[in-house]
Image 1 (cartoon, helix red, strand yellow):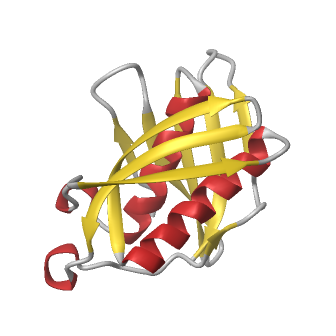
Image 2 (cartoon, rainbow, N blue to C red):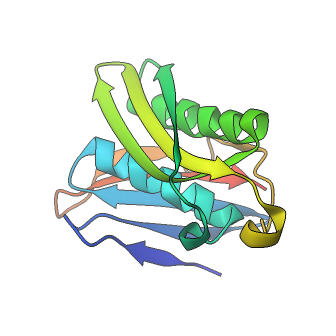
Amino acid sequence: MPRTAKSDSGGEYWEHFPHQADMGVRGIGPTREAAFEQTALAMTAVVVDLARVVPAKAVDIRCEAPDDELLLVDWLNALILEMAVRHMLFSRFEVSLNGQGLNATAWGEPVDLDRHQPAVEIKGATYTELSVSRDESGQWVAQCVVDV
């Protein structure tokens, strides 16, 4: 079932879109960075209610890829890896893009099964419906399907 969450500022938001047995995640914002941040929120919201995750601990993430689409997949897969290795969930993201590089900070906390009640485990971001572009209103839209 599709879900959307609007931000308080700048017309940024994320949404889910259905895709067979998997889930599409989409981030929209006035900049590529905002769209990447919103896509990360959309992905995390597949797993958990974001309001339950306290952004207490910062984790730095760096990626490089030859284009925006591959960089989005690398970014989301780096987050999935950090969630798995650190046993954490994230609810706040700050992304900086510089050419082919992404520098980001993700804030979150260790998983608490009773409080967080994670719904699924995301296996990975895919190239399915992968796109990073501007829409007709000038907003950046970053999206792909994640394997759940």
